[in-house]
Length: 329
Image 1: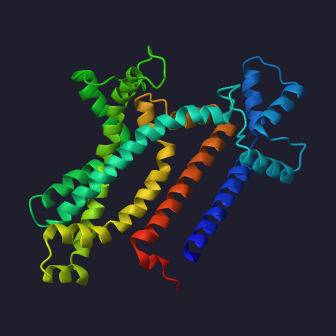
Image 2: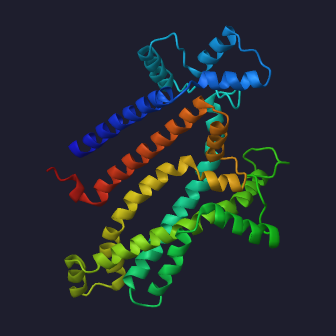
Image 3: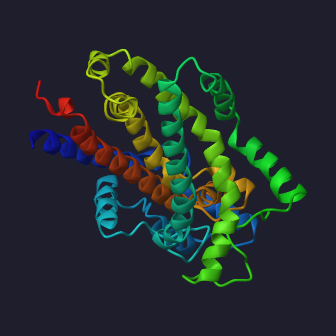
């Protein structure tokens, strides 16, 4: 029990530190977001009188007349209430609403693609590592080459081949724009159809890394004493591979999967941009282009919480998979 309490306390402290950095870093940057937005407004012929400045300060939560500590306390209070401010680039929508509209698309696309690449890569890596030195082992370099290929380059190749030349998949968007979004078979089918090619891009690019990592761990694990003992007992090869070798070899991959799973919510900005996919990565790029500090802070906060949450869950599961990690030192 002490192990789990200690882990939970560590991640709570990490969350508080992330929230604090998320508040102070934008305020430590050169310039002022209000000045930036007012300059843009002035270039477009808008009014920049004190009333407008005051409105922008209240809008962005950067009231220069309020002490920094009071701003920090207000910021934490707003976070607890789920109030992330108002998005300038999507005015007058709240940041929470903007994120809630884009996040399901990213979680569905990148989440499923990450899970598939992990399962396929780890499964193939276990088999290849078990049969090291065979013809399967000679195929590993081909998969690792794909891991070195940039997402955007592979995405462009897939668009050229599967969309332009073969016309199997649409060129862009997350669904047919003539349909109304909703939980109906026609829209779901359209979303799956439009998301297949971006998901395939992510899977092909990342499966090689999981395969190589699992293969190398399997090769190391096969020389351990408990594997040799299992062989000496006359256990079946499949049982030795799954219950003894693979179960221990997969532990580093599980830890790496936690980090990848946490970053699912950040999306694949380049991939989403190439396919014009309506995910959180596109919203982050839009926020950067429009100096939308509230939306950037909100997205960074969601990413941080997702990464910490995923690592916490995997840390707790890690203790169940490998009881040695719960031993007090």
